[in-house]
Image 1 (cartoon, rainbow, N blue to C red):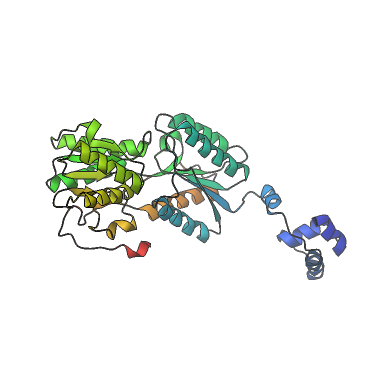
Image 2 (image 1 turned 45 degrees about the vertical axis):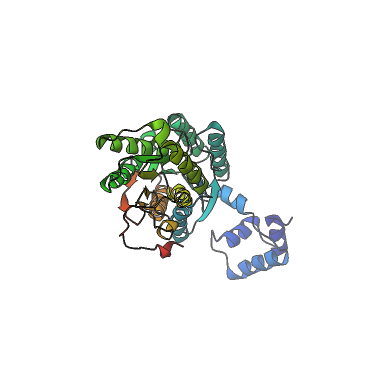
Length: 359
């Protein structure tokens, strides 16, 4: 393999001169510079980017770890991150925690992704962690130690608030947003409201369950948690199976709050198959406001989450840390608000509002 010494020998100059020409570190006379470039082309010399990164303070690369890249939530978020990274001249490495939530194997895999990114000298990491609430404190300490292994690598938590553990966070209020969704069903006349939740052990799932339960209690509605809350897995198949179970357990239900829109789409399919009219008999609301929510029939009421904007904010926080590591700023904590979007799955007369811009 041709090395920098071969180029120096061919051009009749020192190794430092070759380095200065190829890296643009110092001025080299045009005559010598042309000799070096000609020698490099003739020998088909290619610089080793990894070696260059090892010598440099910055790699020009950030890492992103998502919880479920195969769903339809994170692509919006990654789009926002990539927009900012491209503007700053950075590349994005993307990895996924394989959709396995809240257990040791998922955490170990996510930790390994962190380790790989750190060992490859990325300049920063944005991550949506799969770790459970109970293990968050210890886990975040591990992440911070890894981030300080070679250089102080900034890390930003997306979707989860880890600011209490000293990690910059851009997150959503799942409890409040879920309360808004359930209150909307109640205001529409629903009194037997069930919930299709996400998988076990996830803090964001627990927040939405708590929001559901507290809002039911506030309105004087009783909940049989064994029958009226069914676990899904954030997929349309999970919503499909959960809706079938709810109809068997609670045949007189009149409202369903789904932990995300994908599960709501699966639930809507079951209701159509069973001949249950939406919203006349059963009102249905989701969470996230993904593009498909506006084009299914009936269109899906939901909680709009600023997905792309959350990615943009997380990237801005990260690059602020990368470029100003000695600024002494306190831990950053950004709460992204949500809002109710009323469509025809809860109000038959609601206007259409196709989200064609996000296709």
